[in-house]
Length: 236
Image 1 (cartoon, rainbow, N blue to C red):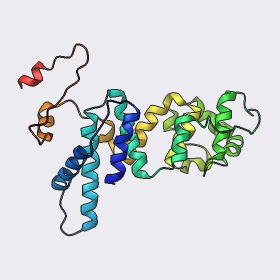
Image 2: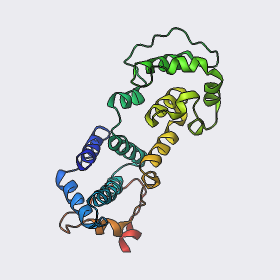
Image 3: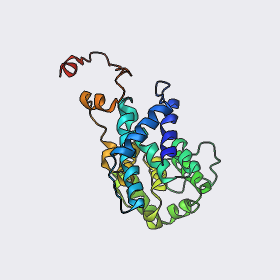
Image 4: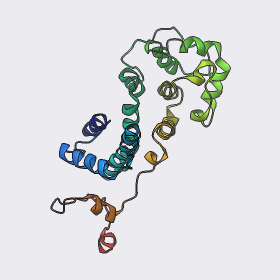
């Protein structure tokens, strides 16, 4: 788990070059997690679970302090899919819509669905576990139309066997049918697999930041947005 999470945060440098985290900082945070996570002298397995739970949220909380607001859900989602061990090909398809794959399957069989959406759906047949989606779509047109027209499609039950689909497959389907609802669907994905606290970034709290800064000789650097005034927080 520790190695997986470290590579989660190193990938943030691809999002913004300002997001850089040292291995020493990460190891210090990990060591603190070992000290402060709940002990369990009777069960080694439970002790490992306690460490994983504590450190995963501790890392999320500390990293969120250095992220722009729009990127906080991103790190929670990256951590979730990495911990779950999601297939890299499926994650890539979720991000790109399979634009690098041939569509095939001919013209769209229904009038209510845009042709470009149908082409994207056809590309899912090249993913493991989604080969039958197009055929199932044709045989359950009414059910898919209800999902497509729903105000909250991410809360709808998918037709047929797809109601039991893998969580990432459901995200892929929603990304193709209703991309406007992908963000709330990703939030629900994170809640289901990581917990609600991973979609509620911690508020700015200067005392807790100083408490987490174990080395008093390492400066804390705050990047303020235009018009922000930290004077009141400093005076506390």
